Amino acid sequence: MSLLIKEVFSVNATPDRVFAFLSNPADVVTCLPGAELTETIDERTYAGRVRVKVGPIATAYAGRATLTEIDASARRVRITGQGKESGGSGSAKMLMVAQATGVGNGMTEVTVDATVDIAGRVMQFGRGLIESVSKQLFSQFVESAKGKLEVVPAPHSFGAEVVQPPAPPPEKELRALPLIWRALLDWARRLFGGKSSAA
Image 1 (cartoon, rainbow, N blue to C red):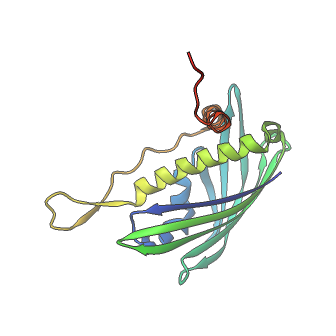
Image 2: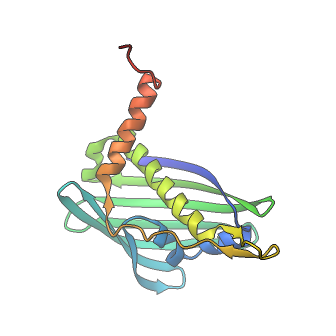
């Protein structure tokens, strides 16, 4: 199964600060639920692991990610990754391009384009549900990244800026059931258009 993901979000931080964050996997991974870096292979290649828990079943995917392009002038990062399910036959491959563009007033627009190829047991959930869960995960990533990147005026500091307190650390495991439940609720709202039956 191949998924195409395209997302755009805005951050109250300078483009250079956002680009530095996107090009540092050690920073990015702290915003991904269940993910961790396990080894720095070289300055652009990293090994990592993602833990997933669905009800009583827990599994993990191990693999590596490579920064194949870091374009400072365009503030663009290209990442390729691949992983295999520990003790299983599942696998995943990813190609992602992220770009930070200044839009004025200290704001930055971040565009993410990704292609993800998935094989294995996760396929049983079907394309629609997997896409909905992917959106929920991306929303969690954006919320956590904003908490680390955004700045606010310090009170009585005459215009000085301070970084917001760090966001809570992500869970050690990606618990998929709550994400699937929210995805199903989103699907139901779209299906029924938010209408309720008459009493």
